[in-house]
Amino acid sequence: MSLATIILALVTLQRLGELALARRNTKKLLARGAVEVGANHYPLLVSVHAAWLISLWIWGRDQDVNLIALGLFIVLQGLRVWVLAALGPRWTTRIIVVSGEPLVRAGPYRYLSHPNYAVVAAEIALLPLALHLPLLALIFTALNAAALVIRIRTEARALSAISGQLARTAS
Image (cartoon, rainbow, N blue to C red; front, side):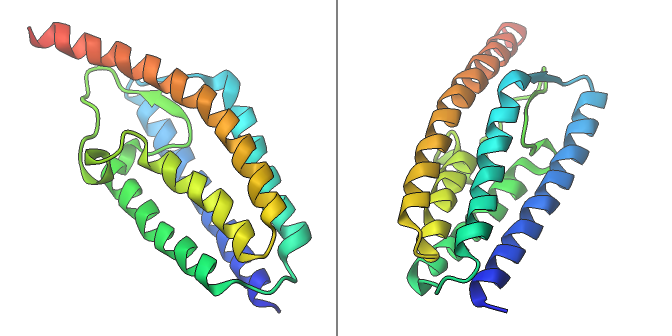
């Protein structure tokens, strides 16, 4: 088994584990009265990410590995864990709005408003580069950027509405 295949297997298992965690967190949040926003664009996001991973399996599983790009990808995994820890039970792959709760400002959210999206965008570029697939890095970086434009606008509107509610209740 090649190093590329091992890496892709680990990334696939990681993503499946994250989907299970996200599903669990989503159910708990919705049970507490939270509301999902922007569900109509969620299939687009999932499709881009699934196509990225499938493409890597098709064209990357037997490639040599660029260890520098792989090292950067591994560093991103530490940042991913930091994001997950900062959001805790509020981390999900969907936009779930919890009315009455302040925005998370801990961990990487002190420095960036969307650190998870930054990590994922970098991963989408770096893993194909680690497998010597620059065209896939370019294609999926562009597709992810297009999906994120929709997602971040939707999320910003939802969070702005919640922030406005918090400000009105505090005064």
